[in-house]
Amino acid sequence: MSVRRNIHPAPWPWLTTILAVACLAGLVGYLAYSAARGAILRASFELPEPGSLSRVVGSDQASLAEEARAAGGESAANRPSGAQAGVPPLRERVNILVIGLDVPDRESEPARTDTIMVVSLSPSGGPVSILSIPRDLWVPVGPYGESRINTAYFLGETQGYPGGGPALLRATIEQVLGIHIDHYVCVDFDGFRRLIDALGGVTVTVDRDIYDAAYPDGKGGVITIFIPAGTQRMDGETALRYARSRHDSSDFDRARRQQKLLLALRDQLLAEQGWPVLLAKLPQLYAALGETVETDLTLDEITQLARLASTLDPNSVELAVLDESMTSRYITDKGWDVLLPVQDKIRPVVERLFSEGQGREPEVALVLEPSPEVAGENASIAVFNGSGRSGLAEATADFLRRQGLKVVQQGDLDRGDYEATIVVVYTEKPATVAMICSLLGLTSADVRLSYDVPSPEKVDIKIILGRSFQLPS
Image 1 (cartoon, rainbow, N blue to C red):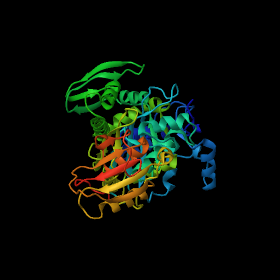
Image 2: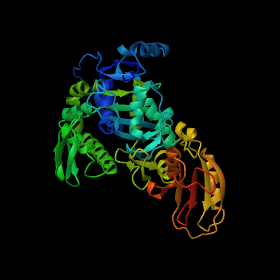
Image 3: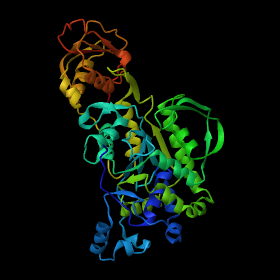
Image 4: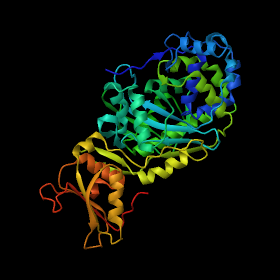
């Protein structure tokens, strides 16, 4: 059974509309929203009764009205929209987690995350940053041990984690990337399809033919899809297929397509005639997204983001994907094909995207806490230098100890002509081996299993450092 958070209906009809605009462009839509904020506030149109149409976490009409009275004004529910002008401006960078769920209806079954992005805006200026995270990234997930990062939401929903899926996924990303996540926006497939259709489609240039003979049909089976190369107008279902398909390419290519789709939506909204068309469709957007968008952003925070967005260049966007240059392929002991994060490759990208020009420095994690699985294995490790470079074994051993691993021996080998680094495993310790490979930028191809041969050093794992090895900074 899924964990449900304290969700209340939106007290203002246009609140969900603003969230729709935010999700439209992967939260880069905040930039576009600010350009038309005045027009939206002045627009006159009929919207459905709020009822249960919006899923806004952490706010309700009573508490918002009480805040308004405490501030010396009338009830916010009765106050003109322009009265929000008193909201103070943001002074620190805002990082927003964008979650796309892999089920048509999250109420019917627990979901995993099919899309994970972090969108970042800084009040000090500079580009809006969007970082896509592959769903097969193998990381510690809270108290549940190592797993693919896309299971964090599912575990949070089904295992009683405080705050549910968004909270566990947020905590997992904060640990892996060493940044602070301020808010989240979550949308499922049905909401995405309905949103695109309500906008009349989106124009995308497809770089190459997309053929997928195993595209999930949403009913437990698969279908074959084909999207030809070239510029085309996509309806909601086609746009979803374009964003989700990965069987004829990779998760990295899919992440880049998702980013491209978001920018196409942004460009469409920023077009000369984009806003009049959008304003005319606000009632449809409201109805389309009311039941499919969930966020912890409050009305005041959305207003703050709108004010911040008005100071930024909507054409200045920096995109990045944690791709094959920042991960290494790894086969787990259960035979799962996953990606290990290579921290010394990821860290410079995170610093560039989330620290340049911001008021608050990122909390870059130089130390990874061992997961309960790693701690439970309590593996003894020996580190030997086969590269011929003086001091490498000692420095590497110290680095691994700072990560919480139990290095009991280190030293130089008689030979200094090892070209590649290898990990020799004498005792089955899969979680520890995965952590070592992640920390040192190794893959399963660098691992040698020697369960039948006793370790001369009487350790569980031996690492031999080769000439090509570079100690993470």
